[in-house]
Amino acid sequence: MDWGALHTILGGVNKHSTSIGKIWLTVLFIFRIMILVVAAERVWGDEQDDFICNTLQPGCKNVCYDHFFPISHIRLWALQLIFVSTPALLVAMHVAYRRHEKKRQFRKGDQKCEYKDIEEIRKQRFHIEGTLWWTYTSSIFFRLVFEAVFMYAFYFMYDGFRMPRLMKCNAWPCPNTVDCFVSRPTEKTVFTIFMIAVSSICILLNVAELCYLLTKFFLKRSKKAGNPKHHPNHENKEETKQNEMNELISDSCQNTVIGFSS
Amino acid sequence: MDWGSLQAVLGGVNKHSTSIGKIWLTVLFIFRIMILVVAAERVWGDEQQDFVCNTLQPGCRNVCYDHFFPISHIRLWALQLIFVSTPALLVAMHVAYTRHEKKRRFRNGDKIDIEELKNEKVHIRGPLWWTYTSSIFFRIVFEAVFMYVFYYMYDGYQMPRLVKCDAWPCPNTVDCFVSRPTEKTTFTIFMLAVSGICMMLNLAELCYLVIKICMKESRKTT
Image (cartoon, rainbow over all chains, first blue to last red; front, side, top):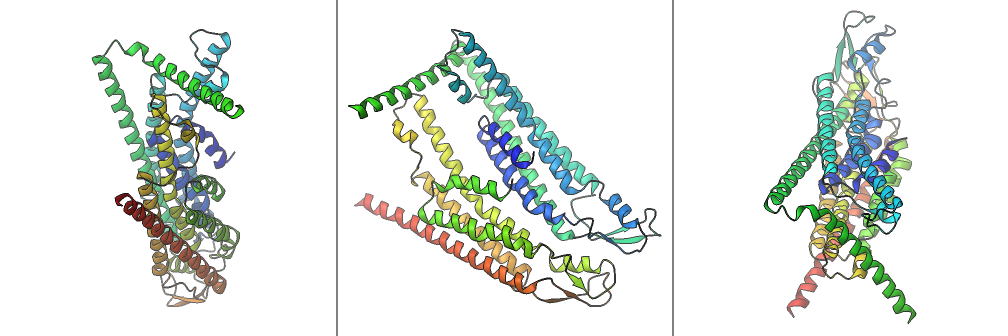
């Protein structure tokens, strides 16, 4: 189970997202996860080995490192990316549940079910309306909350986003005050700022998506208030059109076959 | 999520590229990404471990290394490759959007040829031409910016054997020796050369697209 597996799981959610949601997912995978794996992990790779303190006292380096870096940046980013990705699974679960219900209806031979076979149910793309809208909107809200919480945790834990070159440590067993030097501080600062910037871009995308969904919802409501008679048949109309499309495609396929044979 | 996944994502874009675009993608993957992963990362692997300074002062080596190598070559190349690859995703998104629109029009009952719907290749014309041309333009800009950043940060493309450091806490001036300077210089020049080739391919592709559209316009007027 690694980042590739997460990519596979979330790729499935992509189908049911809005365009902004798809852009957000691309930014997440290419500018955050990929940068983390390919570059940032190497930069922080020697963080404890090359954390050097100006003392011969055994144990002092360990204690100072632990004091100044309670949780490493890399681990915090990994946690952040996992927490931020998982609300999308709520949507995936809801879609799976809907599909399961439709398959159950189909198998029972329900007259209302208008699908020709199970393959159609599996391939169908659900529109973001009704209860799915609420699930989707909650998932975006949770994403925003997690992003904000982690950004604050970073700021709080490391007193800002800059990595200092030198830290003065006086934790026991260090004698008096000891100078400790961090490995690659400039490179670490650059990557921290980069990850914060991309985090902010992701937050903006999520806010934009939330506004888009709310606007769409209110517009629909005002249309319904204007035309109450058309509303009950709306969903049936969509599914009927989808069936007509499928029929047309299958008819055209038959005609092509007949054309070739004659 | 690593270079292999990037290849999977960009492989899909390949279908909608011109021939020069396909050559560019191949050069990118084989002569840049593969060289980075297979060779360059090993060369720079011990860059801090074997950066040796002529002093016993604790912390001096760290500080000097940080002063002379603010961002390692390897990370700069990784960032460059990611930024240079991503404009191609604009094209992929545009193609996906065009297909989605066609399917929606078909569902609404408009007469769309089913063969056209099923046809995988989309021609580069209309708004897609603009998206494609902008993506090439951004590629060229990113390549140029990173090449300049390299030049500016490391005062040229040669890796010196010795650097003189006087940052605190180093006492006075201290001699520090870089690990594998010749090998690093060779790879830096190699990556620079391939960068140059990629830029030329992008320029050629841009010229080709512009000439194609100008010729089409002149045919329309006559």
